[in-house]
Image 1 (cartoon, rainbow, N blue to C red):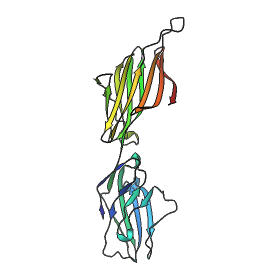
Image 2: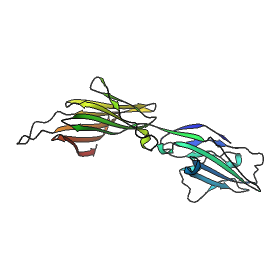
Image 3: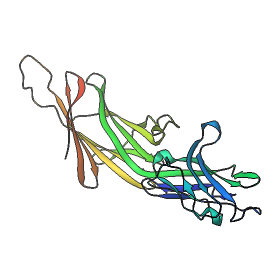
Image 4: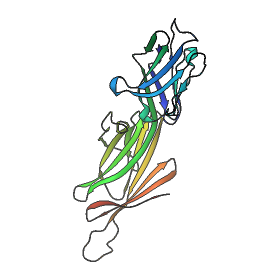
Length: 259
């Protein structure tokens, strides 16, 4: 068995896991069964299985086969390579290919080391929010997804600010193993704060505008609201606006819309 120890892929694109074999007793007259698994042992998941009957040149999968997987190689030419369409982060893991030669003697071979698939994706800011109260102070929180895990930085209007990393979230529990959280303390009204996430595949930024409190509109000493305007941007295009309001010392989201 001959496999590649590691294969890297980009989320959303197809990827091929190479696997070839050779055996002196294999002939075109033998029936073959090809098997691909994700993981090893009892926790393994069978992703692809096909059979190439004696005298045929094709390897036919079962009727329940997930169409996202297909054999890229030709088993009759000793090629068992597997193609995965539209790779996702959840496809990351170690894959094992196996071939069974069905003749007078049932012979099977499997690579014991497997192929590690690493699916990567550019950073995506999936949440940017403000937490806290007027008494304890407010903090901005930026949740980011990406593989490799993105580096997160905070910027004020003109300078780099010091944030603190609260993540990554629990490793190994997908999809949380690809997320990290960064917090910026002491967010002040009248300022803007930018969360910038980057990894080798790209960069994404989101800016939080904290508007000063409006003058009181009601009688009776009620505290004026603090309005927060959140914009998530890709380049210069604003794709999401969220308005948050602080009233009576508690933060609550009052409306959300696409633009």
